[in-house]
Length: 174
Ligand SMILES: [Zn+2]
Image (cartoon, rainbow, N blue to C red; front, side, top):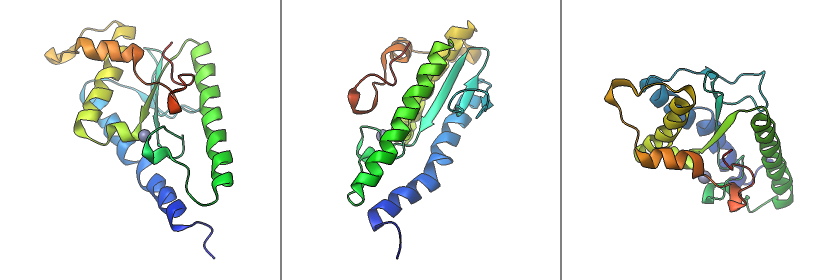
C-alpha cells in the first residue's frame, strides 16, 4: 500500500518539484540580474538560509507553503493522516521560528518569501524589490543602473509579511 493518499502525495510531489527548484531559482536569478551578490545555504548559520547577503547581514528564506505551513491554501493540512501532518508541519513551523529568533538575536535581518507569492511575475518583482531595498539600505550602496526602488518597496521591506496564520510572531521585521 502506498503510504500517502493521493492528496498527500501530490503535496509531497509539489514540494519535490517546486520548493527547491523553480521559485527559489527564480528569486535568485532576479536578484542576481539586479546586481546583488550572495552565497547560498550557508551551513554556519541557523536554518541554513537559502540566500545570504553577508555584507548586508541579511538572509532570505524561500519557504514552500506546504512544508512551512503558510496561511494560504497551499499551506493547509492534508485531509487524511491529519494528526501526523499537523505534528510534523507544526514542528517545522516551530523550528523556523526558533531559527529566525536566533538569527535576529545575532543581528541578522531575516526576510521570508513564500513560494505562493512569487508564482507570478508581478509577485516575483515585488518580492525582489523588497529584498533589494533592504540589502542596499543595509549596505548603503547606491542604486545601480538607474533602477529605482519605490517608496512602497521600502515601506513593505519593514512592515510586510506577517507570520503564518497572521500570528505575527515568526516573520516580524526586526
Ligand atoms: Zn503560501
